[in-house]
Amino acid sequence: WALAFSLILRGRYFYLPRLNLVTRLIAWGSRCSYGLFLIHFSVILIGNTIFEAYGFVSPYTALIMGMMVWGVSLILAGFLFTQVESKIGLQTFKKYLVTR
Image (cartoon, rainbow, N blue to C red):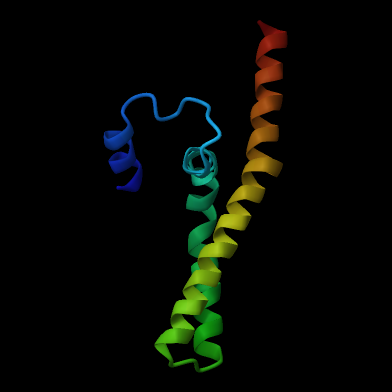
């Protein structure tokens, strides 16, 4: 929803390369979205297991744990993009250029 809302506000030229922090964050998020899709559920399950194993009951602890899970998911998604997806995509692109 945030992306759709920002595109409505900014128009079709939203993704032009600028030194705008919001634009760079949205571009980074769009590149890492597949890695986030792949990893987020596992990280949520691990966070839930830790939360239950230690018997946390406070809503503040749940909020902190949720933010930590979200942060770890974003870090792992960035790692998946930089270390796996971009390298595999570059190798595939190079093979395509050599064979054509």
